[in-house]
Amino acid sequence: MFSLDRFQLALERFDAANAEDPNRELVDGVEEPRELVYARRMTACMDRYRPEAPETVRLAARCQHIRRWTSLRTDYPAGRDGYRRWRTDLAQFHAATTADILRDVGYDDTVIGRVGSLLRKERLKVDPDVQLLEDVVCLVFLQHYLVDFAPKHDDDKLLGVLRKTWRKMSEEGRCAALALDLSAAVRALVERAVATP
Image (cartoon, rainbow, N blue to C red; front, side, top):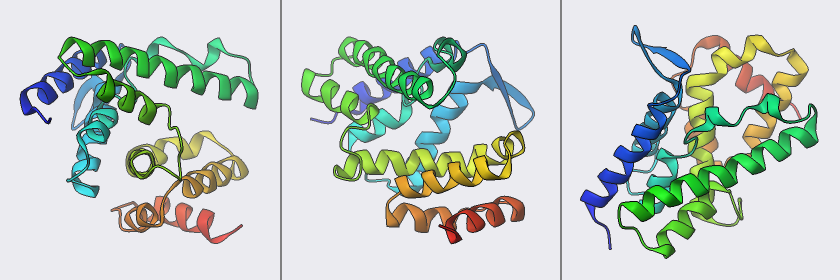
């Protein structure tokens, strides 16, 4: 049963954890903890894209990167295998960290297990809730992070990342991506990536 008080308390606990991020991002002239900014962007995107989303998906969106700064990519070997291992370990870490918070605020094992499954992206392309979360992840990346990500990578790498992002999205998510208010340069980059095989 949905309890707004319990839901709000969970979000507050997620935000308190992410407020400890030592990395900062400038938002409207104010420096804020990077993962707290990301979490709020995820919720705002979910509210616009699918305001009627299930409670478990809304919880997963808010804690998608919870305490992410504590596990660095540089702690893993270079290359694709190292990256995959880092991402897998991160998903497990996010699920475990979230489970502790959800249990503390009164959620049962069914909800905790479901949120963990969403965070681990189990059955992507099959489970509509996992797909919804992935669409929101991709939309947030395109709207808020691509502009800074692009200059750090060569053309081939960048186009490859964008094509992979596009493949992860549902058709509805792709339509929403093309409707985003993107800069002309970012829009051109996305359109170029999705127009070529």
